[in-house]
Image (cartoon, rainbow, N blue to C red; front, side, top):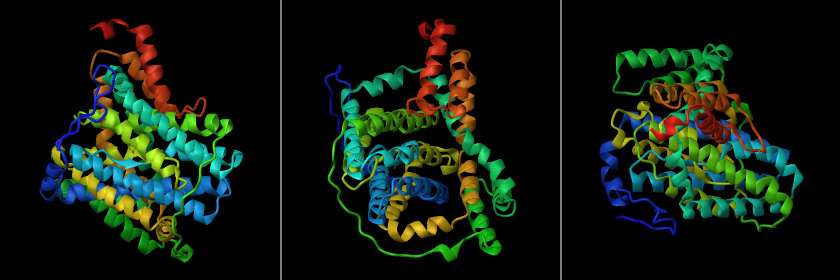
Length: 416
């Protein structure tokens, strides 16, 4: 199956051609192994723990009801998982779907200023804006123009905090996180065919059980069905939620995922990634969700070397992740209590270990070449700083600052 839709912008394809669903389905069985399965599970654990708590915190700040909160979680997880399955099978690439974590952080302060229905209307508009940008073909042209070292430096800076979690988690929880770290090193030396993350996960869970790290007493299960909400449109929500959210989806999540995939040698379908992120934003808005789009950190986990040496088979990790991620959304009302029971330091440790390969590759490609050194440096430090301007997070400003620095200090590199 091949789909190539052209835009009016010099025949730039909106939906880039991929191998197709038939080939993806046919090869899945041979590509599914211990490495891809483990990477998919680790990505799902990461996506269903800390980020879920961020959404629940934003909902609490906005004084949302339990029904509104559960519907929000259902939409971003179910449709985010569906994006993983669709793009994973069609492109046979580890392109993961989820939602904008910086967007959820931004909503923690924005939701109290508007009614819930006004927020729903703003989510809808943000999805439309992202979709239009995808159809224009501009995103693909812009991302291909930005020098690779600057993109890689942005990835290194944005993901560096995950690497730091290896140290901070071991310090905060020396028994649980320390056991997981020791298992990683031992597993790597004993058998390189099986991802050492698997041993970290198993040993970490056992250590948490033995030390009482799980807070089972807080688990209370009650089934709540997702609901559909009518949007209300206001200028305040347009400028306060819709515009920043659209920029975050493109400038933070999609840009990170594009850079990560490029670093691993994939030709990422950036226009299709943008289009499906826009569609995801429109669909989830009716369920009270702020967006379902491409996921930067989970794409990094599933596309890393921890998902196996066979790059053509890493999409299997994305399929595993998509199934688990979507299932979390379907059973959000029952799953959320279990998320709260997981030791946060164990989750942080696993995510940090999964990012090692991505970080090494990003640093190598950012600074190994002789070109764009100043641009890469400024992109790195801006991304690491966590800078937020006009409610737009650091990865976007990292790319802008990196390109400007290179244009000023090393313009000849663009000509070469």
